[in-house]
Image (tube, rainbow, N blue to C red):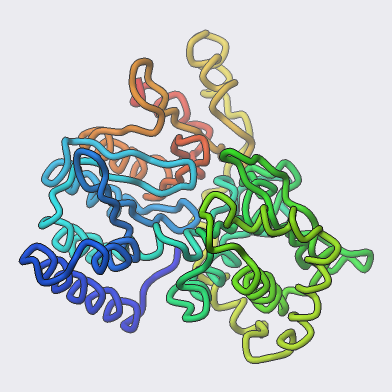
Length: 397
């Protein structure tokens, strides 16, 4: 996963200090509600009916066990002992005290986490397939491109106040585990007729009160043009999207009113101005981001070891769980495991502080200390040895 450098750490420290001062002034009555509104939204903070809610970014749904333990700490000390994983791979805490939020953000910064751009009319957390990097049928690992988009979109001065919130998803497989067609921009890794890997880009997808499937804006672009293509789409949206009615301000409404052909023409005209500009990606930059998503130190293992076959044949409950929760892995001898957060009587995605700590312990033992969050509000251990699946199942029960 991406590792922060000195600049990233300093940026987060400055951001926390700034918001601490803003919150203090608001609580002392020196800042009005209207003035505080954009400041808190830029830091993921909602003021709801009963208590403030903080949404924390989990870029492309990837967490380390260290980060999970920090989330458990926050749930225990600042919330009511639980958090809530969302359909866009983030986590929310719903019962906070406003005066505690700067301290919470400081705790998050210690483990390279934040709540920047998780709310407000800006580019939100970029999401992807929860099986990215380990799926058998994957064309290419999408996480490096999500990271490139994250770095490009964070604090982008032109897109800090869009007509409405804006969501991007990237997918490298045909089965579209990222629900890419249902995002404001959907990015697919594809091959052209020359077998060159690039991107197909859709725009205008979404759910809510007006569910729409995204429509094609770029049939194929080279990798170097990824950010300039996204920039062109967002510029057209920022220029022409409605700001008089928030219910009609999403890009899907703009495309419906404009027509996809005219919208596509506007985007391509804008793109021609910037496609070879300074935001064009060079191979060195792509490789830099790819270097954060290398394979863990796998052992050489065979598929379907005897201990697994024996457990499947002798335990019907384990066999049923295996059928529903285990997927093939690109590496022989390993499997992908989905951990369900859909307990009867509990809201989907809710997880307690103790469960978070237990998941972190299991991740260290069974999946190289990493956990992924899914769009279905479940968790994934992406790198489990097949010979240890029965033991993992026993620990989960």
